[in-house]
Length: 323
Image 1 (cartoon, rainbow, N blue to C red):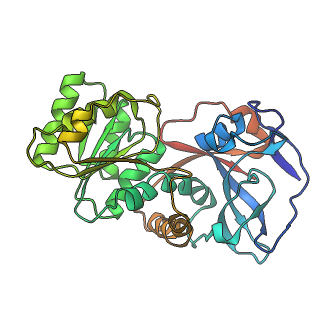
Image 2: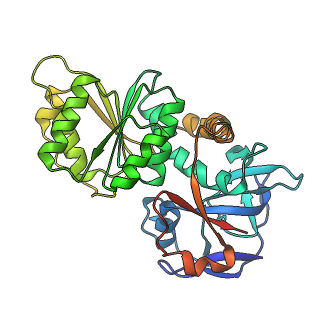
Image 3: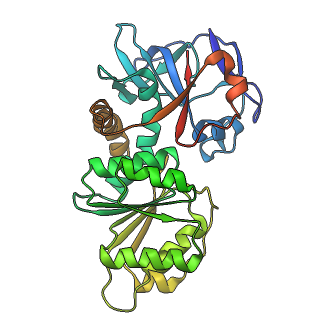
């Protein structure tokens, strides 16, 4: 069969022949793949730089961690697999599959789940979002940040604040449900002042963070209490685009009811991971069919995988490989 294969760690995937996968146990099924999205996770795993690949011995590998296609009985499914998905055939575990509803295009079904993992899991399980909560999405102009805004709305957020550097993309988030926008292009003092003003007007319950680094330092500084009772705020970090470390004053933690956690592979319980496939992704597929969640895609044929692997994709769009 044809597949997108990384022959050496860090090299660009090539469109080449690869042995068809074989079913080795009763917990596997064969999927005829029709589309698969390419994400930062897939590129990091292909390069060997992702923490989930540290102990792996490299060998020729099919890229991709999830995809959509047909089962042998003709059912349309989304599936997750650690054995590679950008190929004509793939092996999947039935417990990590979701039926694709009528009316949902293969490309949208392929593009949406990873963004759901990077937003709904944090909102639901790490932050415990409740209807009426006020949510701040830090670094909201990326694909997953845009989905986080929409899912927060689906979960009943009363108010959504977004931050980002791209002014045009930031303002466009108002159409997706954002109520307040705060530019990271502001000076540090102006940014902290604005966050503090918003927090005083409508206390922020949840911060979903995609960039970490200095912006989080400023947000935490804006939340710093003065020794009186403070509002409980849960900060959940999902990405580190602005740096992997921050400086955190112990005074902020002592003077403020701030609770910091992370959301990503390895941080979810088995029960939460199971609910991702049995409840959360199906719910978000339904929301997409109903027009409550929108995601833009840029499609390419698998034959052109080498050309597009390192190409710059338009902001807010997910690259989807059609097979």
